[in-house]
Length: 87
Image (cartoon, rainbow, N blue to C red; front, top):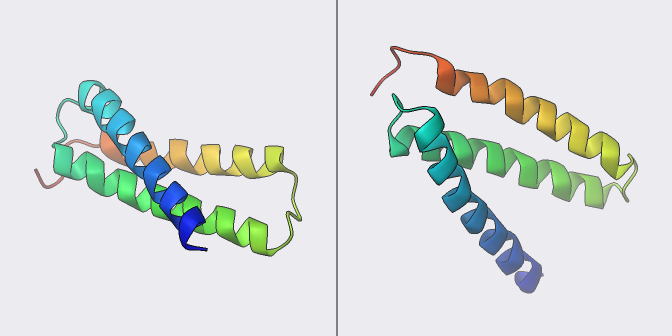
């Protein structure tokens, strides 16, 4: 419903601010645009995975879902570590 989409958007926006504050200090060589791009990619993927999990009637345990998302997020964070990308 529209209301749940608004809640999802609010959570994504709130998390984006936290991520931007944290990651701009952690990855000083990256611009806010690069960090925001990374966040949008990760958040979009996570939201899609969660909606899919709901549509599949919570087939997997929430702990498994959280672990899988966490692993992927950590792996993709390594892209922010790479030097020499487009700045």
